[in-house]
Amino acid sequence: MPAAHAPLVKILSLLGLAAALTACAGNQTVPFTGTGTPAQSGQVVSSPGPVAPALATHEWELVAMTDAQGRSDTRWRLPGQAAPRLLFADGRANLRNLCNAVSAGYTVQGNHLQWQPGISTRRACADVRLMDLEQRMGQSLAGSASYEVRTNAGGPPLLVLYFGDGSRWELTGSPTAQTRYGGPGERVFLEIAPERMPCSHGAMANAQCLKVREVRFADNGVRQGAGAWQPLYGEIEGYTHQPGVRNVVRLNRFQRPQPLPADASAQVYVLDMVVETERVR
Image 1: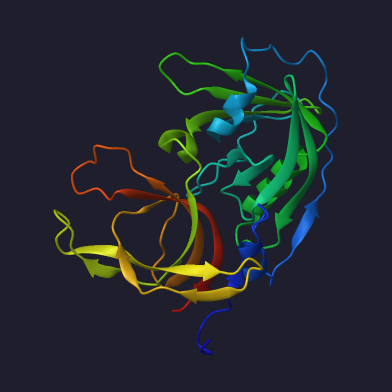
Image 2: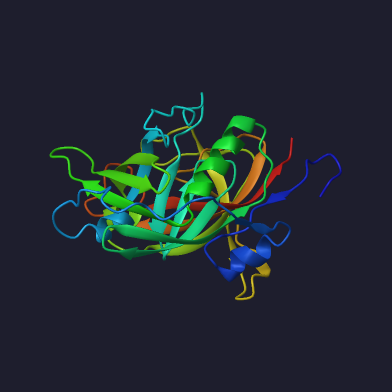
């Protein structure tokens, strides 16, 4: 890498994929210790019917937080920062839109979540308020919590998490990509160039597309090679491109349901995680 380039940042996968783990071996995950205690019984009014499947079929965005004294806690609202999101997948609860990726295993027993020891990537963040929020939210994923899913006619479901210290989170749900597209999708890695490239496709005359190439990894995580650079028609769900920054991303690729909208790609790419980041200018 030329000396003028900024240091390469690699983030360790929390989801156990060997390719991502080895490709990101420059960083470490660290245990996320918390002070959570078992949730008190009687805190939850159970919603009718089975609710556990809804946890994994939706991605949950924080809309309200209450502290242990029952007061509204608005410290999670940071200017220019997307709201934290909680995703349940593969037996792990994953916090997103924080400085680091925070993850904890969980099991469901009735309307109770039992958290398992969590881990986090170790990455400095310029915003100390975001790091403080990450620490506080990560500490909540310890011990156990009670939960309920409230249905809302004509609107998104609401997930309420009750923690043992009396605090709670409220999160609105939106269907995950797997739910929307009817399957788990195909796991792929793409390298995204620092700058976009000209592209034309149907009505997209003189457009600027992401410049990408597919990256291949061996089972042990060693990078084997990459394909040719080409434009990516359409955007990547959940990914915001920064000019001058090269990324390697782990994506889920889905087939778009028929009939296709005019000039839409037959495939949809959804961000799972950023594996490598390098600022080149």
